[in-house]
Length: 288
Image 1: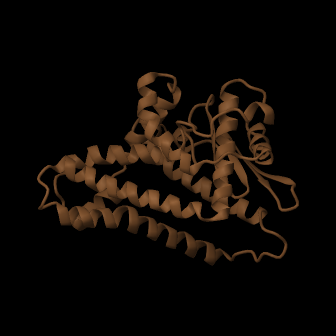
Image 2: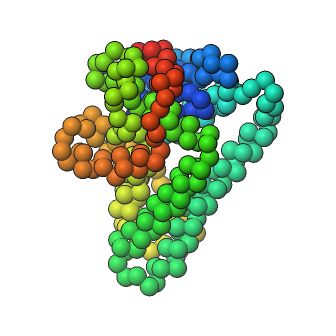
Image 3: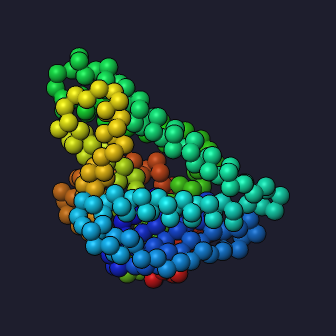
């Protein structure tokens, strides 16, 4: 899952198929364990668009821009990892197959996490008088769907391995932030749950959306869907909250705010094996 990466003293990354992508400063590196056990790399220097254009780097704007940018980078890295993790007998997917799969995935995401909650909202808006309570109900429905989605992924062996690499990524970032030498023995003792994780970001988005959409009254179904699709302010505010709390994770009230996201990471992270930690270390060493 993505972390916040804008400052040079902050590192983060993403779990990919049989590997880890790390980013620090203007460097990005992905390390993938091939079926023959060799670790292969994809490296690039990249200056975030929020640094290249001052307007896009302004507070509350940079969050949406960074989210889109990291989704694009993350998807490219994920495709690289999928190719590297294939055995010689696996058939490489064609470009149109990848594009079609991405469109289907996007459509399913919009349907389950935007369309269905908006439809339920439209059914309840004339029954429930309190607009804030109405948005809380919609938020709980969206959270329930998300938990079901995560639960379904846990049934897939490949996704459980991705969650283990996710844990390896978090442990390695924690070790580096703590000034520890990047060796398996040091990294093993750290937590798999990190406050800057994308899972925590999703939880913050859900909470912020309840507050923001409570200000928009009782729109009909179509307007509700459009608001959800076209309103970047939610991700902008959520990004600033994650950015703030990530730097102050030792503060007591920050720990309380971070708790829901950390609990969610009990699903999206798993204890990694030593060889998975080695892959995370290899990726980190390429960017620091």
